[in-house]
Length: 113
Image (cartoon, rainbow, N blue to C red; front, side, top):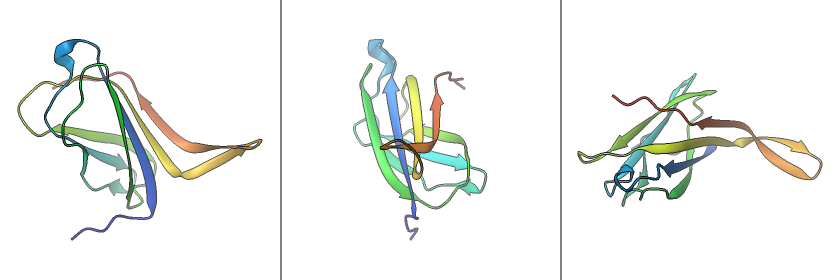
């Protein structure tokens, strides 16, 4: 049994706007970094409708600097994300009275295979 690690991450996914761009199939997400990859996480059991946004916050092992991700749809189907934002919530910098995540990866261009 794998145990969640000490590093907190937040993944936010927004689906494209066309009606067929969403999915009702479960979505899984894995973060990849310089020290390896995190555990595969269930992002959404019910999928994500077109033009909707959903987020998942979870703990994982330290994967180092984020370099990529794997997005999996459980059943055959189509899903087209518009934007994916990955935040490392365990690294912060402070400006004035505000804390901001130090590492935020925002992906807006996708290549489909």
